[in-house]
Image 1 (cartoon, rainbow, N blue to C red):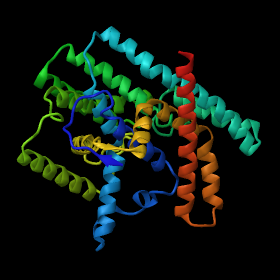
Image 2 (cartoon, rainbow, N blue to C red):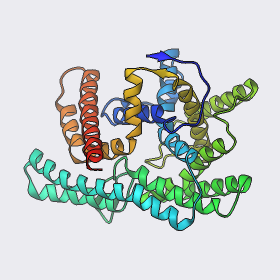
Image 3 (cartoon, rainbow, N blue to C red):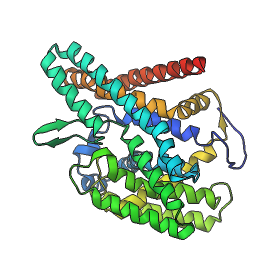
Image 4 (cartoon, rainbow, N blue to C red):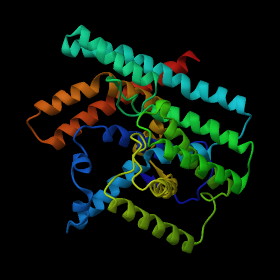
Length: 367
């Protein structure tokens, strides 16, 4: 890969690289057993470790895991354009809700077939598939139970529901307020979403949608004030980084992790703000990496351009069949866990990308 020195400019594909990286990391992060220590080990015990490498690894993995969805939302906010409320609703229905519904239906059909093929039990296959269908219909971002009935998580496509809600609400606010008032409106909606997150059962990712309004506003105001495309004083950059590091340390010391899908905000608004700040930093760094050209970076950008399809197809394979096969493989695997994770990740990534690029090729051919 080669690097060319130039300044950051607004362009159609300026975020393709980081979106592609996030899609790859999303698939990697859904590999069973890969980050087991983050879920099973006590964070405080890791922080008291004498190994600087382990502390750095924990910080790096935490940042990557926590900022993925905020980054995508900040990017969406950067591209936001105010319109009438009716047009906004119609646009979200066409661009987000229809893909969500199609993904959910395909997942349901494939789950029924794959579950039966794997376990050879028609009754269990129907029961498990109804759980997947009902969870997708109600848009639950994580598994939950209602009156003893299991509702499965809808998978990574909860993001589409949250984004649709956030866009509609932020557009509504943009038609009423400007500048500081609009930002305050976004913070208010975000705080409301945080309070809603304490409710155990929340359909259609409403809580995440409300919180996403804050991240949408960050991207929107960054573009309005040209913070990415104009050079900032070093003192501002250093101060911003110091604040981000302090907040990250505070969150790590809390012994929990920020996780939008599961409504986990260990320090409430502080955790939400911290994820947004680190999201801005990472987006800014990747914009400078846009200077890199070459086969690998071009391929990653291609993934980023098709991130919607990657997200939907990954959600289908994750819920319909790969989750079950991967679980069985994890239970019966006798070799290295690292090797198993690498094999599963490579097969899953290859499958998702082959399906994605095949779909886009057919789609372009039919135009």
